[in-house]
Image (cartoon, rainbow, N blue to C red; front, side, top):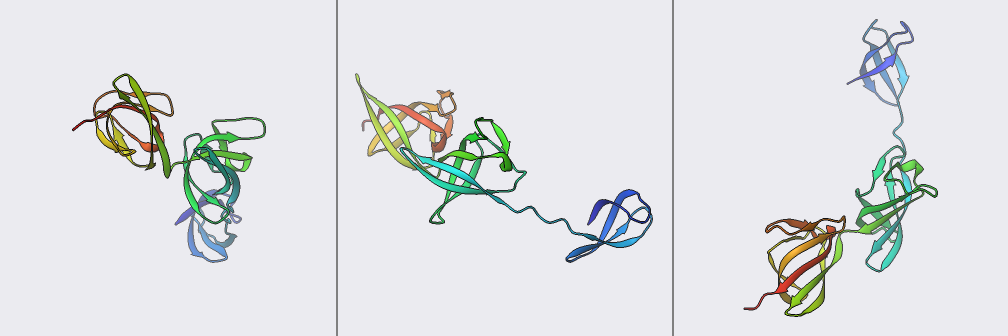
Length: 194
């Protein structure tokens, strides 16, 4: 392994070969061959970032361990810990830095991460039955996939999906287009009769 450093003997900043790693490093300058000890850089300690985790109508407080210079963006998928040490997969929906809500920030700047649980989600569907539209709700794993024109058992009913509205705006209408349950805002469809 090699590192870049400034040699105390020749004063050149050059590539140094690491000869031994311990509490400090034993290195050899690539420019002049001088061998010397240099302190080993410490790994940064992770920090706990306060996190609000929303799961449908319930919000809970947790933390996410991040390195201070780690950049977090809207839509990032992370793992949060609750007080009882339960780990839960979440998606970042907002970043709070003071009074601002940036789309990206370093972990050390963040006051609170606002997130949404994505492991178990409730998918909502509007199903047409002639002139009546009936709402249905199905608890799913966030990684379950739904496809336009697919037939699914949904809340005890067989439905065919006509289109899917995503949380970030687009509507999927083309046959075969798919989306993960965690990305779906609402499914629209019709009953399948056998």
